[in-house]
Image 1 (cartoon, rainbow, N blue to C red):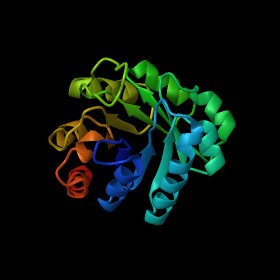
Image 2 (spheres, helix red, strand yellow):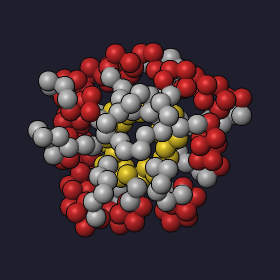
Image 3 (cartoon, rainbow, N blue to C red):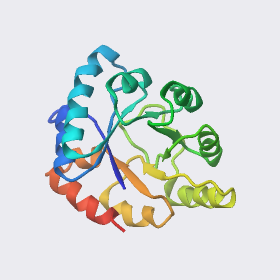
Image 4 (cartoon, one colour):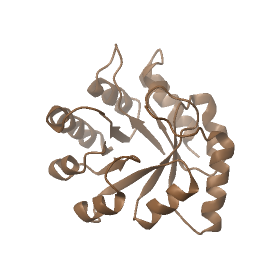
Length: 205
């Protein structure tokens, strides 16, 4: 299970990045555009949603619950400083996917009780695409959180995120997480499409 988080670089726009990920075979896209108004995000989100529909991909938007509802995206991802998951669930109902960011087992438990569908857990290592980074988890951090979840009988998909490269993936997948979220690794590759194909092959069980 692989999620691509849109990003822009000097070379690629947000929509370019999504197109490359889809062409490489990724079928789960998150549009993440921080510090920009909904008005600016809306036209990009509309086009990204259509691209994902055409490719049969799941499309979620970071943070913007109202926009998700308005456009009929598949769901929303909520970070630690965004709307609480319980509130978003009331707003969206049960037909939308809601993901939450977690750095500790306590975060996971709170999201589970608030009816999250999956957890974006990280960061695996230091990453420049995110401000105000939580403590880095590494492999041991994931093992520890997965173990605590099993002991508490919490069954929720965990997606590892934060500075992950292709070389990291086999070891991360052995910790018990079920997916990987990537951004810069794809866009900084010589051929983003080929890099995506390679990574999808690595993440398939």
